[in-house]
Every structure is written in structure tokens, then in C-alpha cells.
Length: 406
Image 1: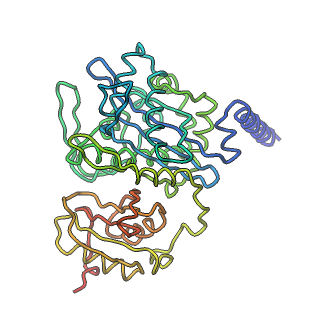
Image 2: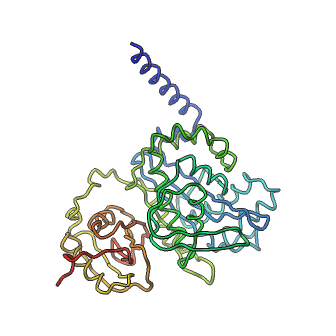
Image 3: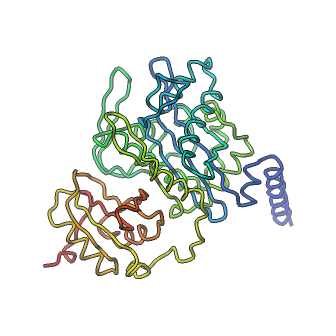
């Protein structure tokens, strides 16, 4: 009898909490009505007595399909803002507004959000409204990761950086780590040889790992202990009810339903020059509902994409003939490999790049390669390449004997 009463009380409490969320939270209502939810995540540093937004990530969530788009905006993205003639990089917008607003985080965050919103809306008939912002500083980030019990990451190359003046020392060897808040901050701040593009990719993958960590049942018991420390390190126009709704919804998102993208463009000196045409194609992808995908779990053979998914394979490793080996492997598994070659630079990590905006072919290719590597899937839609998937083979790819064609 006591157990039955406990179950009834628990169910009633959950029902009341759900009703409270729906009544108090616009985000919860949007989730119930299956409307897209968009926001801008801003990571703020504190250097030279001012602030910069060294991390800017636009997110768009489709509740109907539980599909999350993550669009990273490089901090060196070139901007031209008449009201801020001295500002050339998008990360300087935060510093400018922080100084001129008397260190008001809300005014500053809204200014950055408006610049990003304008940039992504340019050329779009619908525009791209971003209602919410979430700004977190280094201390808040460390506390949040500690509240999660740490986050697992796979380091694929040596990461070494020392800045005694800035009190920053980063040292990782290849391997898998459970990172606490301090070490996690070092991981996401590291730039390395690939500069900001490499850091963007690591931050995106880190976000995916955070969403995986949110599924840990122990989180519900750990969070209250860290609530004050986490809250002191962020600024947002989301209410606590909104954040509770997002936290509960985040536990339901599968990692295969996360599309990781980066603002398209090209290097322009030490800046990043946006490609407006490709950007609008990405914005259109983020606005469109992603079709329900009952067939997402494809067989390892890739037969579901036979004759439809075209693939190019590039060797970015120090191992000769690797591209040819992988070409033969993928063709045996039913993929149409239309091009192979050597990549322009060497890299440690193998990447599978979605070029169409549909993640399924890239995920099927990743499944086919799983015996040789644990590859990451990122989206870089580029219709002009005329392929669905690009495979960039790093030194981490292990070609077994049976994959050799001789």
C-alpha cells in the first residue's frame, strides 16, 4: 500500500510539474506545439580587462522530429557594422558593447544576438529570428561540466600549448578522457595547427557529448549541489522554467539527430569571410522540418543507399594507398565512390563530411568504416561538389589486412 501511494504521489508531482512548465514557460509551450526553438549560445572570456565572445553557436531545434541543428560561427568572422566602425571581427562586438554598456551582460548579449540574426537573415525571404540567448563565462562553464560529472572526449592528436602570461597550459596526449570542468575548458579553448576551424569542430563534438551526458540519471541528484555556481556564471533571457523544459527535452535527443555545421566561408587574411549563398542554403536547412526517419538505422552494408549515395575519399594520412583501400571497401558495401585522391594537408582524425544536408548517407558510411576507425560526422553542405559524402582519412584510420586489394 505504501509503495502504491508513493507511485501515485510521484505521478501527481510529475503532472503538476509538467502543468507548471506549460503555464510558466514559452519554451515548454513551443515544445508541446512542435514549433522550432532557436537560440544563440555565447561563450565569454575575460582578457585585457574586457570581454570577448570567443564562442558563438546558433542552435535550432525541431521538436516534431527531435532534431537539433548546431551552427558554429568562427570568432574571426568578418563583419561591417556602421554603428561600430572599429569592429572588424564578430567576437569584437561583445567587447565593444560590454565596454559601452557599462558591463551590462544583457545589453551586450542582445547586441551579439542581433548581429548574428541579421547576418543569417540576409538574403532570406523568411528571415532567421533568434529569440533566445545564453551567455556563459569560464567559471560557469567549469561549474556546469562538474555538475554533469564530467564529459567524455576522444583526443586524436597531441594537444600542447603554454601561455604563461595568460596562465593557460594545455597538455593532452591521444586517448579517451573523462574531463572535469577545468580540463574541459582547456580542451574547448585549444586551437592548434587548424586554428579556429579545428576548435570549432572540437566544440561541436563536445556539445554532442554533453547531450549524451544529460541522459545520465545521476544528473538529477548532482545538479542541485552546483546550481548556485552554475547560475552565477551565465546570463540569459530564458527563465528557469524554460531551462528546465530544455534540460528535460535534451535528454530525449539522439546523437544521430544532431547536425553539426559551421558558417561557410573562406580565409581572408586573418579573418573569415562568409559565403552568403551557401549560408542561405544552410539557413533554409535549419528552418525546414527534418522528415521523420524510421529507416535511420541502416544496415552496415549501406545497401539502403546503393546507387543513390555518391562518395569521395581523400587520404590525409601518412599511409599510402589508404584512399584506394577505403574506396574498395565502400564499393563492396554498396556505395558509389566517384573520386579518390590525396588531401592537401595531413591530419590525425578521420572525418566523414555530409555534403547534402541529409545526415543518413554520411552516417551509413561511418557505420561501414567502423572496423577501421571511430569517425566523426560533421555537416558542410556544398552542392557544387556533386557528392553526398566526403571521407577524409586521418592517421587514426586502421586498414586491416583483408581490406587490401592484393
